Length: 182
Image (cartoon, rainbow, N blue to C red; front, side, top):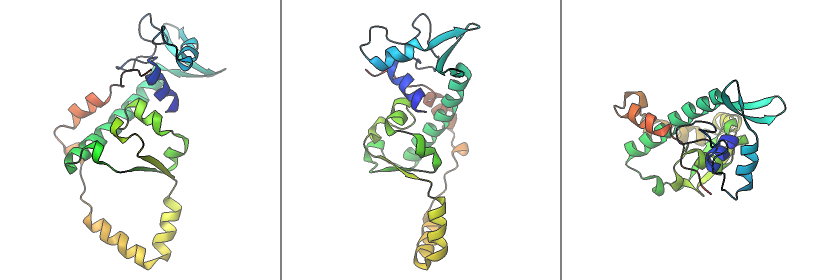
């Protein structure tokens, strides 16, 4: 995710998710950004397809990038629709906490460069790590917290995104990567 976020930031992938689009393998060749130059130098065409070499036998292909793009589109569409459903603007959100092992290997900047989260959430993202075990322990051993969790569960309103008539349109729009930033 960090690599794809950096590729988006540097313009090595275009808004549609194409890796090294056209003759501009490596995005903005006039860039003074050293990361963009390093990434551009790792782009190759193999059997007519662009791929970025990460290490000797490790590379990022267009197919890999599309998988990230689909996941990013689904997550971003979910975020946008949940905010809309709650009547809350992204700028009004105080904090985003990302739990689970997913967050162990991510940087908040990458999530923003990818467009996985709205830019208005910059500086408001934190990572809680894998909270399953500590949450289960708290739930089992602390009766007050168990009662609080039960009350919270009753107050939660489920939103089925698949039933939202605008989901497909929001999902398609969320597939795009943001324009490169220098």
